[in-house]
Image 1 (cartoon, rainbow, N blue to C red):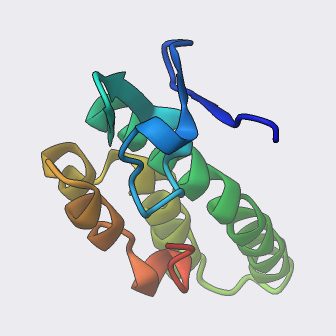
Image 2: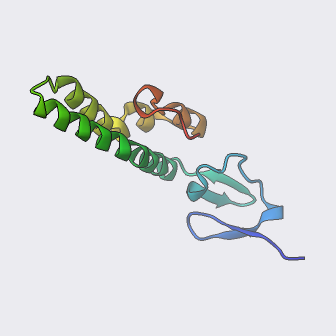
Length: 120
């Protein structure tokens, strides 16, 4: 039988069968080992969350760039497009992310109206 070890964000390892592991693996890169309990470091979890926002918003911004070019070609208003692009750019700085003190609150900070369905 092969033992399975879990390595936390700080490089500490523990035998998987000897520790309490969070059920949610979305923020595994933020796991920290404290004795026999693994929990999520919220600062690291927020960074992971913001990176996911950046990943999801990239194609959304590219689509808005196409809309902007088409609007410019036809001399249509670009105000709504610019507003949407600004909202996408500002998404990682949402106050709900910074104020989240649990993983549940952090996941609830996903703006579905702006970014679409939550990956969490």
